[in-house]
Length: 239
Image (cartoon, rainbow, N blue to C red):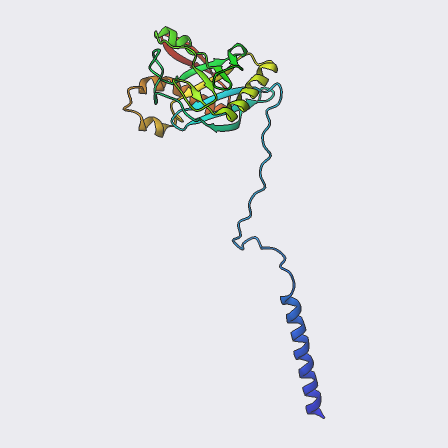
């Protein structure tokens, strides 16, 4: 009798163990733990929007083929809206000095409402304002240096038609919102200490050193510096 009872208890234990095991293994996973090594993608950040009345600033980095569009709301520091790839520019690094050298300018320029051209042969365009006071003081020549559509350049910055459509529309909106001048600062490259050391033997290094304070000021403050021309040189002041 004792043996029979022992067998019954043993069978019940086995049955209960099987049921517990089956229930445990059939449960859906509760999700990965914090240290399971799974990479979870972050949700995309909301796209930045340039509102009517925001101010614009354009920064071009030639060697990186970067055309950066920055914006400021309510006089706050500038934020990067978008970095576009320049389709092409011409003449390599260094400033433009004379008509026909096919150089795309470097330095501190700006565009205004009157320099917009909706009837451009290159879809849409706006003049960057070359020659500026620095260029004229140094006897540099040239004209009709533009940011435009397409992908051909003889001193201009060509952005392709779809990209110039977006940029042109935002520049036009800035003027409609009250901005009188959109600064366009054109640097040969991101003017870090390492980059300056890399190009220290360039024939243009002395000129580039006059551009660097403006680059550094904007990198630190995200505000556009004031730039004057004195003694045929750029003089950068706080914004």
